[in-house]
Image (cartoon, rainbow, N blue to C red; front, side, top):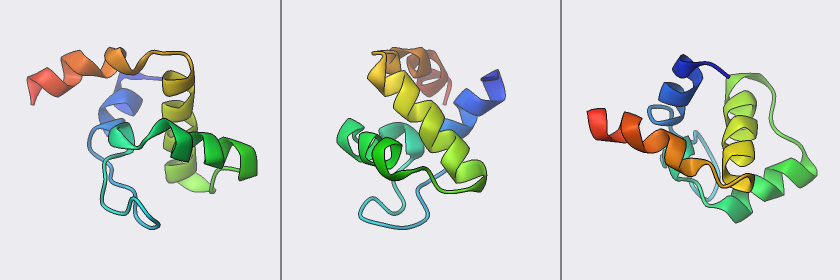
Length: 71
């Protein structure tokens, strides 16, 4: 995980599915957990979803707050 990865969570939107166009950082935990169960998609989206799921699962969503406040 890098600082750029955290910034990407706040700038990349989900490209498909029920939460299409919602920022990765704003996806609900149950949706992220579903991906963890069935498998994350390949590529950057999958990597970001996995990172966000780890943050959510471990109660670390607040790590993104300072980055949100900069925008």
